[in-house]
Image (cartoon, rainbow, N blue to C red; front, top):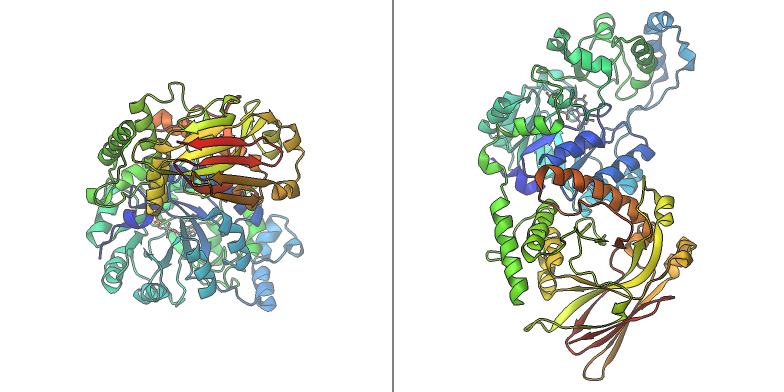
Amino acid sequence: MSTSLTHLLGTALPIVQAPMAGVQGSALALAVCQAGGLGSLPAAALSPDALRAELTLMAAQSQGRPWNVNFFAHVPPVPDAAREAAWRASLAPCYAEYGIDPASIAAGPGRSPFSDEMADLVEPFRPPVVSFHFGLPSPQLLARVRAWGAKVLSSATTVEEALWLQAQGVDAIIAQGLEAGGHRGFFLTRDLSTQMDTFALLPQIVQAVKLPVIAAGGIVNAPSVAAAFALGAAGAQAGTAYLLCPEATTSPVHRAALQSEAARHTALTTLFTGGAARGIVNRAMHELGALDNQAPAFPLATSAIAPLRAAAERAGRGDFTPLWSGQNASACRAVSAAEVTRSLAKGAPTNTRTTRTTSITAIAQALATAHRTGTAWQPTGGWPELNTADAYAIQAAVAAELGWFPDGPRAWKVGGTEDINAAPLPEVRPSPAASHVTWVLPAGQDEVLIEAELAFRLASAPVAPNATDALACLGTVCVSVELIGTRLANGLSAPANWKLADQGVHAGLLIGEEQPGARFTAFTPADWQAQACHIRVQGADGTVAVHESRGSHPAILAGLHPLGTLPWLARHAEAQAAVQATTQTLAHSGGLNAGDLVTTGAWLVVKVRRGDVVDVGFEGLPDVRLHIA
Ligand SMILES: Cc1cc2nc3c(=O)[nH]c(=O)nc-3n(C[C@H](O)[C@H](O)[C@H](O)COP(=O)(O)O)c2cc1C
């Protein structure tokens, strides 16, 4: 069954860049996301700190586009000291050749499976897609991943594995054929005779399951993608095709091998990790036996061969390097990941590629008209599916239509969720004149949501920002009140990205009297936790409601200083500039500059009505009074 993968994943193209541990990081994944495919970050070979750093980049720079983080889900074997010793003994002549003392080699697991600790680390980043190799983690761990709202993918190498994955509730299945580079993802069997080529495996899995099936293995160009679709695939995953991209970290010896005639001869081998994986045949595979060796079980064989690999690579040789590659490296070219993605996508049927240009223009025009006339607008036929890039495009189109931002937006917002991540604010009222403001609601609109937060005026542009630099940029601080049109309130059930587009059209930002920021730069996390905020609403009928909050700022809850979001914003500004250079459609291209106002997310959100007098305040800052008229 061919089910729309783009609909499931939210990507523009049904192309998945295969996660490839050891040869790529976020740069490749982000480039693929940018081009409309699903970029994947392989986590299996990363330390916790490295994984955190890479996830930070993915979350910050994916601009709302879906991305994937990939984990291994193998059951770690019990170490076998006798087998390890016998294996090292068989490697002794090689160690001697390179002057390596075997006693100096630490035994280690090499690759760790997905665990509670990894889930703790990943959870704050809310990856839109999580994929697994070697089956799935425990049902409890899988439930945790699903609770984040992530779509779950996993590889199947047999029909039985596909049915098992379907029974566990995955969202899509990657049919990994025998041509594939890297590790066989098999997990119900270790019998290599069960393993099939992609075009034998794919149609059988498609027939057996009700889920979208992604073909993987030997898919390198548009014709092979077209062939996979002809056999029922809903999408295609390619690994080898990306290995020579400048965004990949493929080593020089690996690149050289891929570009040589040697790449025509690959084989499965257990030499490098203990698990069967496909790579270009090299000296180690010739001399030690690719499969007929006594390497310890996956992934324990990783440590014994590692020093040989390092020593040989220092001498410019790939003799002991796992030169992972699929059987078809012929189309592997040193071109950008965007180019590879686009050329693969040409093989996909056009109805699987999402073209949103027309609907974006139509929505932008409808919103601009609604704004001019003060009328509410609801899309006919339900809320459209948009991604964050679409939302920005709509905001930019509406802003252009209404003549906003002749010099580009000068205020930034980071919302409390990953989806509503940053939006230009259309109406920024200059301080300090706004400490007492009458907000006239358009006719027919009797209530409005207000959102109170702290706003920071930058004294200087953040350069190479980190949390300390960000603090150094702080000029002044004030109370900011954002007024959000009722159409946003009506649209609370709409997709978050749609809200972002709507918010850009209907929000207004009022800011109170600015105070020197020095007091706040001295704040400790505990001070931020204790900081109090209130919204006091006096109704026209004499009722008084007081809403209070303390330290509930999303940045603080996420363990950040509220200004800790500045580095995030600066990276976002940089990425947006790059996007705008190519598309000319998105906002946020002017970077973060001295004088910009940065708000960092909702502290308190309250609905107020026509006739209300509203006082909004933060401890230590003067209240802002609003008359809702
Ligand atoms: C260098 C390399 C590393 C790989 N590492 C991973 C990995 O970390 N996780 C994973 O799920 N699959 C990994 N794979 C397998 C891919 O997901 C995919 O099955 C394969 O690349 C598809 O075949 P192709 O290389 O012919 O395109 C790797 C493949 C290669 C070539």
